[in-house]
Length: 499
Image 1 (tube, rainbow, N blue to C red):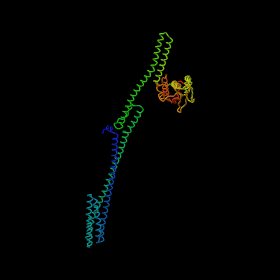
Image 2: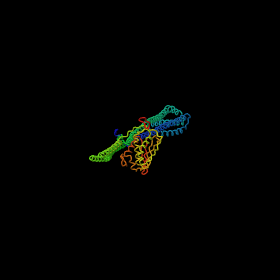
Image 3: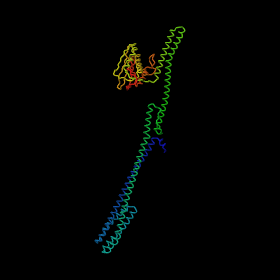
Image 4: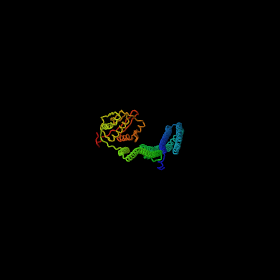
């Protein structure tokens, strides 16, 4: 199978193949272990049989020599009754011979046993003849048989045959030991090979799991984390055709689909914003233009009548309308431009006092009561004081406009544990409904007949540009509390100082 084919194979198939290979290696180890045990058992049986045969041959030799001794003792002592002892020993020897033939089927062993048995029969017959001569009183023929036939022929032949049989059994035992050692060496070699194969297959499986599972899953995890931050152009870099490759392709298709949907939504929102802004601009320009046209028509009529004073008043009305349009246009442009801060060192409490002093006359018309709850332990800090002043004025103006006659406006400051400052503007006015509170920071949204809907949005932008937050808590018929949080900042000696 080619490398590309392996890459395109399903993960479960790859794991199945590796598990089967590992099982095969373990099967080889088990087979080698079984063969090793069987080989050692066979070697042990061969060794035991060889030593048993050798011991049996040694026992046979001792029994035959005991019979030879009986024959010699009969001759020396001239005992004519030695034949009975010879017959008993002969029966024992024949039993040993029969057992040796039964347990030794190899031709060299059977031939040696048969030759030994023939020599033994000759010795036994000779012994019986010697005993018969002794019984008949023929000592001379008996001596001649012992000296010539037995000592010179049969006994040396017996010793030689017993020696060859013993050597055969000892050689057989040595060969059995050699075979056992040879099997042991092969068992060791095959065991090492099988263990190495198991370890190698285990490493291949571990490497495969790393390559096929862990790395792709980590890549998918990193890519989904990037995509979750909003970068829908990112793609999962997994190019295989297995299950994780299919998952990566599905994630990539999802990201591409979400990117297309997001682009369509952005275009739709952009066009919706353009439409809303166009409607708003048209609505706010149409009325001033109508006023300008009416004033111009009246001025033309007054000019025809020669009423210069009325014409001057008409021109003044036109100038006021144009100034109002210019201010509205400037606010609109300020809202679309990014907030650029020019921080300098100053005192928050001094700024709050200036804002309240600026708006006291406006509150005096309603008979409002002012409460300043300022924490004098606030350290100097760095802010864009001009834009911050505009934001605070917008908050206090809203509080004044929302307050009932004779109401109370509270302006407070306090430090926060993180080194920041908390500014609170609280009124006892009419309050807001939940819908109004939710839309309070939307540009152009206002509940005032002559409002522009720019004060709170601009205040929010200025506060957030400083890294702070602004929140509104309101209850209809009770009042509204606006809380501004400005975080602590490091010292910066650049820019002018405000006191």
